[in-house]
Length: 70
Image (cartoon, rainbow, N blue to C red; front, side, top):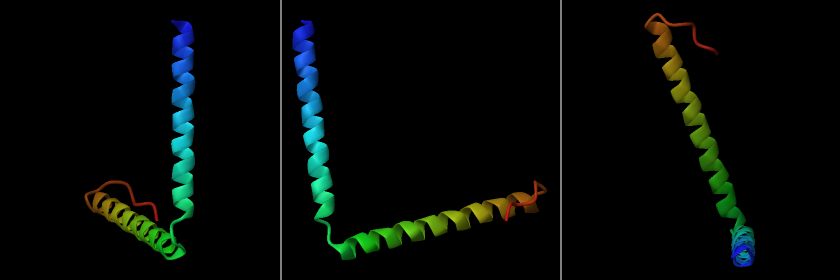
C-alpha cells in the first residue's frame, strides 16, 4: 500500500510539474503588446485602489477619526 501511495504521489508531482512548465511556456508566447497592456491595467487598478483608500481615510477623518495618513 505504501509503495502504491508513493508511486501515485510521484506521478501526481510529475503531472503538476509538466503543467507548470506548459504554463510557463504559454506565458512566454504572449505578445509584448499584450504584456504591456496587462501592466498598464494593473497600474491603473493599483492607482484606483490608492484613491479608494484615500477616500476612506478622508471620510473617517471627517467623522472625527484619526487624521488620515498622507
